[in-house]
Length: 199
Length: 300
Image (tube, rainbow over all chains, first blue to last red):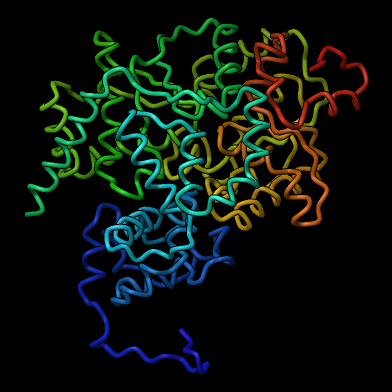
């Protein structure tokens, strides 16, 4: 973490969030992060690590040390494409992909993800569509993602959309389930149970 | 044995050709199946980034519906052709069992809505069903127009083989290669069979996502493949639909059809191109076949 003068920023213990690591460790799949031996197998296997600001190994080290701000605002957690290579290879059986999910959820909850990233916007559009219709219609999802982020981008993508439509691979009608009421009450029920446990 | 077929959202949209060819092959193999009634989104990876418990609940509704539909079966086999659906449904099952708190919360929410998940479900990928339930012998016996000498690079993608090891190896699976050989094709030996295709990153962080697919296509092409066989709608989309932009961006020359493995099966069985959705491919299969002598029956 270099500052504007090119100097390495020093982080003091009092600047950290010591409980952050324990909170992530308490989420499902995160239980083993404190037994990480920092071997770097995950970063070696990750096909995306060379495009990331921090590698998976560093993210785990930073998470348990309490570097909450740096971890949650990093682009790395959004770059994980969930191929589960690290999870399978980890000698300490840490479910690294699931740790990334826990970090994504936390970043969305705290609203600290990098603004220019489309991944959280896509996730939100997806979430809304499924909540409303029970299924997602790919064409609607993509249009709503670009409308919320960068409408100009849609123009460059419209050619691809057109081609898909001509090949019969892009429906315009909304796909939805019959019994939407029961699905919504199911989701509401689980939300209520979850909130009840939290308070 | 009877199966429940779970299509998932992609197979009704960009992956329509996958559904068409999967069903055509099911019929050719005389597989007994029913579509899951009123199925909903599996809870895919995007949903999981927002709320994991809700994502698992979505999956659990599908599992409960399947048990209801096949109420008299001891074990309900669900076929999920999309690798993401396949994994998410299976992951939900594992988490409901492994984490009692998640299991209790989901079970009581289902109960409130007069539903129940008992745990009689087994999630299957069609590749697994074809090779392990039906068997290569029968698959071979139905071949009418063998894919003589066609060089196929089998691409498994990630979520079908990871993190759960169900029917094949995490990094060097061979099931699809065996299947292709049974159809008369040549299986291309390559090491990127399960390397990530970029997933949804091709739409969100384009530069990076496209590069991952580009690496796969380039390697398959270098190994002399005529076609890449895929088993997931997202992999197929990534590998096929961006070839033009990739070549411009990375100064490459990839030009390789990416077909569903079920389309190749259907072709070997002599099923018509239209029934297999071959006309929906962006990079047509014809160009590859015209290079091969004595293989005239494909004309898309």
